[in-house]
Length: 351
Image (cartoon, rainbow, N blue to C red):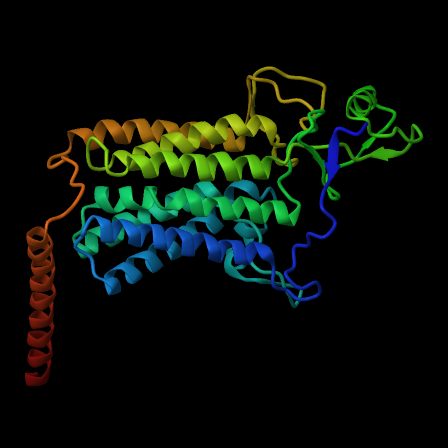
């Protein structure tokens, strides 16, 4: 009896086979749309002083910052060749050898860095409180992230380690191993996969780690943060909760996911002769795990800082008066800016 299932043959990376439109791109769009509506819901339910034009502008700019950070970080951290260092313009060039390939390679952790910087800059320019804007983003993003990992699954990429559990799945593009190896035969016997000739290559069942991440890093983390959005103890709490929560969940799930073959473990305290696709020592850490530890540390430090910042009391719902006053302040700032520009133009004409 085979204790695994094959990757569904009817799933293809392209929406229409033969056309360069991929499900992965559609998943990105679905993620951004989902996050946008969750963000807008919070704006409405809290009566937050932000009109639709400001909302669209803020969200668009932060998404651009997120994509830039995700792309740059992926090329610097996960690309082992020096091509992007030697030819940095290729980072955002979607063609290779005259053929459209898109921007292949995005880093989640780079997206977090880019997104946070985008929120900080936009908040400073528009005179919003970064802690409140960031909290609303933290309650919006995780569910959108689910779509990204579903896109990885559809692409048949970022699969997990070899497993004998009933959850195992045989991915067609996963690395195959010689049937002559003892551990390969042992894994095949446990999962009921027929053992071919000793010199044949075997594709063994893997953890569908993309779906694990979609559920736990996306749905579960979102539910936790969403339920706490109106119960946070201080401004900025949800930012720290997102950083720490995602880092913790991803760190654990990395034990089920095969590390990038060309990167392996960043720290290998306990060495093993078994391939990393089959076994992950508890004290060996992948690139993703190292970055997740940094995220958890950042979340804890931010909690300590945010709780001690002035005016840290959480504002759950704004009154109409506070909304009017805040909007009036920003309107006055914009009016002052217009007056300055008129004076400068007048002086230029006199000269």
